[in-house]
Image 1: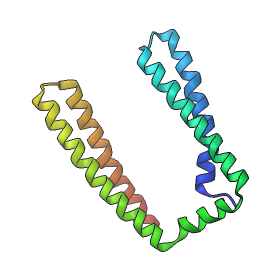
Image 2 (image 1 turned 120 degrees about the horizontal axis):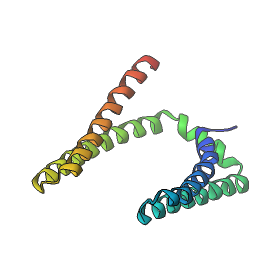
Image 3 (image 1 turned 90 degrees about the vertical axis):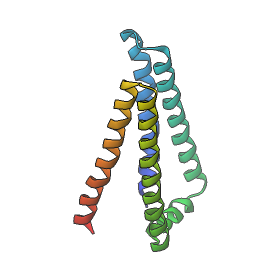
Length: 136
């Protein structure tokens, strides 16, 4: 039985490999070394994470079944829902504080990026509310 986590673990090495290839490809566009290093590091980490996940599932076939039971358990679903809401609030306040700090430091671009990130954060919350309101 495949679960959502199994599909994500299968996608991690593919996404990681694409990131590594992109990190080498953007060398020809004179991208900063830090960007290329970040992309390559993240790509290799995702390849490793996917490989470790595949090995764990092969060595312990009951693990996927246990994950599926834990995902569908009502108590665990309620815990994930509450923790997601608290995480949303903490991140929202952190972005607001970051915006105020950037305003105080007179860093216009950083402030604008923080405001865009906050808008995406709040917008994704409302989109998720609409989607789940129709589903549930």
